[in-house]
Image (cartoon, rainbow, N blue to C red):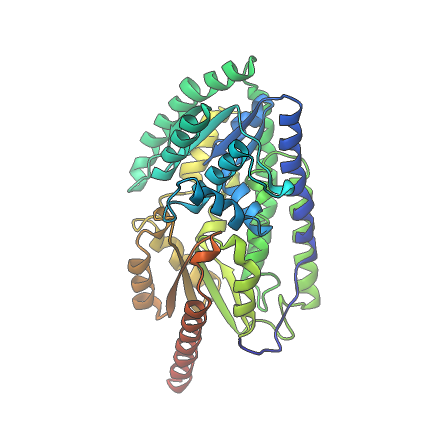
Length: 426
């Protein structure tokens, strides 16, 4: 382990996230115990149950929550014992492990228990989502709806895909929700959720701008743990005050020149691309911190509602949300080799990036598309050194400290070499 005098000045306001997400999952368990209908959701589909009054789980949100509390490994073991293959999506395996624990009565920590749903809604943009629905139906008879989210290859694809998605929601998803809950879908409530989301995301974008500051007042890890208010806590009134507190603390740090990495700020500004390693945040940050490096920006946490100004549910709330998800977010387009070069270039230029770490998930092939091509393009265009670290978001058996240390050492040596060459050429 590298020795260093660098220390992390954690943003105090982010400590509010823990109680917020604890309360969210506690309410889900409480609703089930009272006999209320609950839903599980993956992809951009959880806000629809919210609008009709159902408590709803969100696949990626629960996975990050469970992993962050170091409870994922036990549930993944149950999944493997139940026949799940280790090279399938760890988020999928986590949920199948939980369903097996409920079915077979395996002991699981009480604070991460996930009650079985009355309805499964899958926003399918990868093959694992189909397996997810199928497995839950086959093993538990859970009613399910699959909403297809095709990946665009070019911008001209957006209108056609958006129209297709709106039809699925209006003709399949909403009628199913009404049938399960026995009441009409509340379009006014859906609009309210969208308005709160807009307010929260506008303030969140103000927070993002602080990544341009030198020294850096917070890290990408702080931003990542702050995803919950615009993902599975969407529309709840406490989300806006949360981001206001974060923004105000960041402004105070800039005014008082308090860096995220003490005592003098970051030595290396790193772009972290790919999944956030939820179970290993402190582990990775410790390795970066020991060399004075800070994760500054990345596509994954930024791409959730980067253009909230497009939100206007007074027009047609369903159509507007779909347009925000596709045209406004550019999600799936920026995550493919066809559209990622643009956002990579913007981040390198706008955030003074010294190097790139590409986190390649061993169990999520969708997010690994075009990684080598992108790094090659950025190196040729900007001379930015980069590495790929292989691992997983929540499965500890797929994380190798030796690999991480060796590749980080190589990255920092390349950055130092580039700086020396640049100084000699002046």
